[in-house]
Image 1 (cartoon, one colour):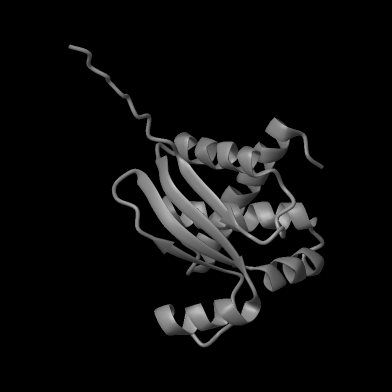
Image 2: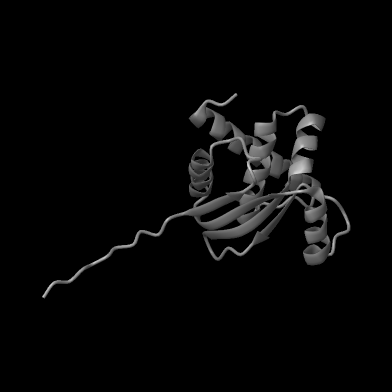
Length: 153
């Protein structure tokens, strides 16, 4: 009798839906995000990043969060315990505008928004002035972590 034994290794699933908008290498972004989560004691189970236009994000903001305002990112966090599961919607238009307004490179603003979604899933918020300050510091730390590891400037 012959028995086949398959061992399935559960892969971290991080997907980017962007229609060639994203300029940073996805495999490196995935490893960076896994590193951010790991440093905070979390594991990435499944995260999907969707880069959409401002109109689509406005509609999602209104429909699901009852907010009648434009935003740069919305994160739907389905995480349980220390296993991160989420969907993030990032406005391509706001990303470009933010980069110009805040004198950032397109890549750094992209890293900021991508890490912002993950940070929300790990309990960081940005409702109060103090929370916003802490979130910005964490985003900067994440961006620096990417650049040190990957040497992008």
